Image 1 (cartoon, rainbow, N blue to C red):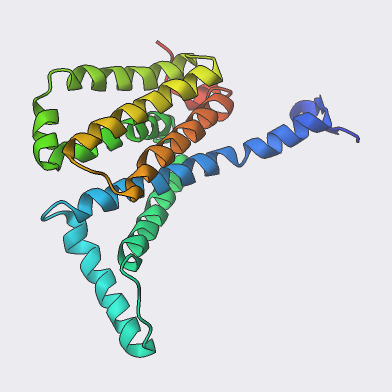
Image 2 (cartoon, rainbow, N blue to C red):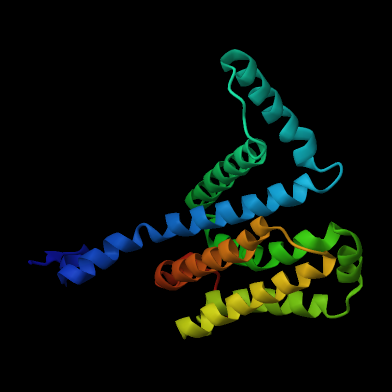
Length: 227
């Protein structure tokens, strides 16, 4: 198989060509996995929080839409159609927003930091309004320390590429979500769907790390100046 010329007339081997083509889809994978994960957390938190924005501006509109479809078609929708439809709608909204931010020159350097912090921080923050567990977390002395550590890790990874070992990266990320999955059990028994939170969180974190390592850090001008 023959290679081809890249930019600047540089000859590239077939594997290099495939790698560059694959790298074009990494930002999409990162943005899609991020949107799916954050949308699920938003729907879950909004559903069980009294007076939330979703209960005022999300569910009522979708409920009326499904009710109209029911009267027009006679189709009976399942009990999970409404939250799943809201999940899909929010996923699309977040994905479009990330696509637009990526096209904005002023915002593009900030996107890796915002998405990285959101991936590791939103799962713990979701439990702040859950009864006794929320009260405990709001008064826990170690929580600001953990929050500062999370933000520092995101900045160090984007700016310095540490840790450089992929196995260590995934292990630390998985440990973070396993820890908070265990903390979440303090509020009582968990339903099976809540297993999706750590699974999607780890997946979104891996996609984010892959995006930062192969796309962002390979173009230094796309990130904030290193300190």
